[in-house]
Amino acid sequence: MYQSETEMMVQGIDVEKVRNDFPLLTRTVYGKPLVYFDNAATSQKPTAVLDALEDYYRLYNSNVHRGVHSLSQEATEAYEGARKKVATFINAKKAEEIIFTRGTTESINLVAASFAKKFLKEGDVVLISAMEHHSNIVPWQMVCAEKGATLQVIAMNEFGELLMDDFARKLTCNVKIVSVTYVSNSLGTINPVGEIIRQAHEKNIPVLVDAAQAVVHLPIDVQALDADFLAFSGHKIYGPTGLGILYGKEEWLNALPPYQGGGEMIKTVSFEKTTYNELPYKFEAGTPDVAGAIGLGAAIDYVEQLGRDNVFSAEDELLAYAMRALQAVKGLRIVGPLSNRVGSISFLLENFHPFDVGEILDKQGIAVRTGHHCTQPVMDFFNIPGTVRASLAFYNTKAEIDKLVAGLEKARMLLG
Amino acid sequence: MSINELQDELIEEFAFFTDWMEKYELIIQLGKELPLIDEQFKTDDNIIRGCQSRVWLHPEFREGHMFFSADSDALITKGLVAMIVRVLSGHTPKEIVEADVYFIDKIGLRNHLSPTRSNGLLSMLKQMKLYAVAFQAQSLQH
Image 1 (cartoon, rainbow over the protein chains, first blue to last red):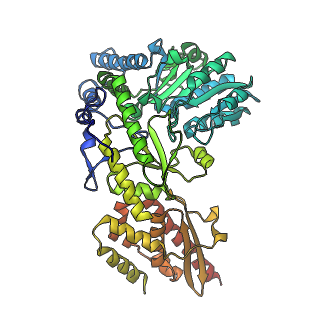
Image 2 (image 1 turned 90 degrees about the horizontal axis):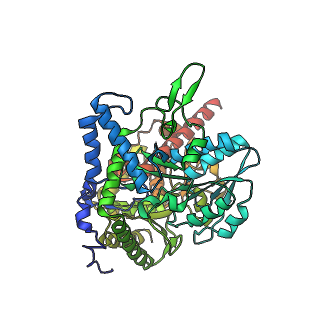
Image 3 (image 1 turned 135 degrees about the vertical axis):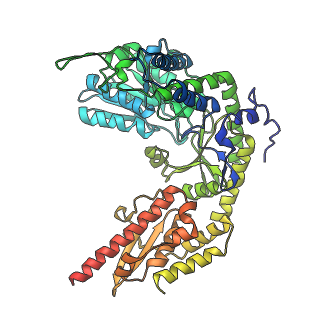
């Protein structure tokens, strides 16, 4: 086992103290203290977020934008305040460039559907990568099938790293949009999205960045990246489920036709003709998830209060410790890169089925994810049924990683 | 032995252990006794839906009785499959259709196995009963 004496204070984060901010972390599973390593699927929520949700429903619940009464104005201010917080958090030029959706999946579906409606035609190409989550594959497959366009895939190597020369080769003038993940949810790879965007822009091709995993572990600056679209989910960054973000450059969002029709997204409606509302409301049909947005705003405040740099460096140290500890486990094989990674660690133990390992870890109170992690093509590439995935958050401890290692030894005893 | 006697026998075997590790050891051990499916039947058609690990199941009908062979790529799943096969194999379609499979609950497996696993177990049971219904209908026609 590795020493855990530096546990208490990692780069400005007092782990024991921050753990108190997350009530769920105190619970037990099968009578054992919960060790939560499924953060890439969803993160736990701090009290600040839970309080914000409860305050909204208890004190000023009402529909936004339309009411003249005080409650509605309070709710609207909080809702629009959350939009501003998100804009600042990812350094968007304007709050209007932030669209509230149901999650990363809906954000990508929105862009795919609206972009295809106007810009995609027969013979065109949509370029994605070999390590995309199903939610960044299927929406594009659907619109490609509808329009007679082709989906092409940037290849990766056996370490789960994108082949940039393959990207350059496939970036032909037929490509109408590139859609890639910043960080792989199953492999943990950090992709060179800045370079991908630079090369695509040289040919005037827009790029959508799936930042579902990246937003929790890396500083996101959409202007520095020069991303045309960027999508993430609130629940992975300590906010509530059901609320996602689509960032789009103003000129792109103005160019796209609306996704869904209904209330909120219109300016005037008659039976003959409807004129659409301006950004961001053009893309927010119906009563939005007001509570979700306010909750995400509280989550962002919480992270900013801790300090993003503090959070990221605590995670870096934890990840380095976990990688060392896991690589020292006999018969354990990391699936994915050994460096330039963040968040998720996918691995296989001996030739045991990931489900067997996951099941035995669960019995010891250790929550990991097993299976294909919604990236079946990645598993096919490595010719494996799935992996065991431990994904870290800043509130995890080195002692928990030691427990994971001990848990794996127990799995070996049972399955070997 | 009847289906219920076989179930009670399994329940008794498990009652002996209180520690989850020992129970799992037994499950894995039972998996080794599973009549393995012939490679030619290990096809996509014979895969049980609802299992996150892969389970193949093949039924045979001989002299009025049904016999199951199966396999799984995960050891714990294979053990669970083996238990159901041990309880239901060698009985008539009528007995299988009418069987009340209570041992899963009694052993506490429905609660203690992860939901995806448990669902797989239940969909396998459903599939075995469907086969039994089909053989029952077939034998009525003859």
